Length: 537
Image 1 (tube, rainbow, N blue to C red):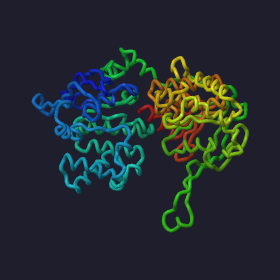
Image 2: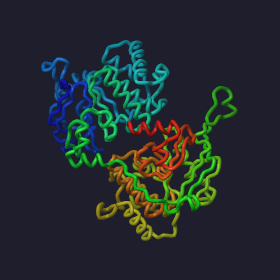
Image 3: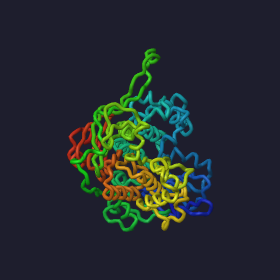
Image 4: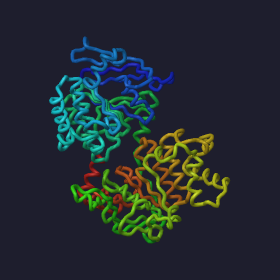
């Protein structure tokens, strides 16, 4: 294969502090190279630096792109003029960004945004560019492409937005595609579809792909070669098979060994005792406007959860798995007493609706949210955040006793003054993602609940941090006999954590039973689809 991109001694610094340290890598025409590492390793900065899209960065080194007739047609991306680089961006090198909702302009239909690229680089008329944009949406597998071209980004699902981003990137048939975590925010089945789409388009157009990811399963399935990045250095690179079968660097071995491991103890209470949480025919509906004149007099209803039955036993984890829109988060909010519902819901043997008179039951059930940075107040110190529940549920404690409880809760989740001087006076932004999630767990545990609702507790974390947090939750369950209601779309996390499982789709429970039995021998076609997609993606 002929070289397409040759990067030598790439360095990126901010304010004199270097974050990428003289890395070298090459990409051949039509090749798929994966750049792998945890958050902060320098992967995304590397890709953005190639197109000089990093603001206020000091970039040095050489990044030569070879034209169709090398060696005469060679340009250095880091030294050519901004005008010349504009002709390369989008036309020869295109990029798919990690979060399409923020990358797409919310004020314009997606068809117009794709057409703009074609008008700018290909000189097409407005009518021709719109027709080409519709065809690109069709090529990426979006149903009803004419209608979707007129839709705004917020009117599309996550998978559709990602497909629209891919269509925009492919508008000018680039020779190199930079794909920055293109499947991270997607459900497992949609992730598999996007992966298959990228592989198919790469074969059809013969383009090279630089895939930036921390998902090792995705690397195994997609890439030809892999470069492993740690703290701004490429510590290992080679063919995917060779690196995964015989990793030479300790960091590579650490990444490969970071898949969730099942380590659940037998339930301390078991099914002989009353369940901590029990639902019978649980139903949650939302009012929606009716079309036409009828909407003036009567509202319709969207049923988000329909007739769900489940039990959560002491010391056991009930995993609720399904795609976005399946109703699993709505089910969790109802269990927390935050949504009105039909049917019956019993918590600790009492009828539970989350009313003011049931306030004492709130300490029985606590929650850990998906994104710890959003769920922790940036204006409160660690001591105030973790101790807040005690002010409500243990108002008789004085400041000294409350601080003692806060210190003990933080120690339980592996945070102490020895490792983090001034811990109690720090703010959430001073911690990493995994440390913030530990703070969120400590905040939930301090009121000594019997059940935790875990809403995608590790989906925003790197693989090594995810394994640490799952290990922490498993240890706490064994030591305290905690029950978990685990909400996730990650089949590997369910396999590692759950005793029992509910599979949901479109608000209905399609299959339920012991977790390993359901995952190893699924009866429903949708469950089989989820399990198969997890193996692919």
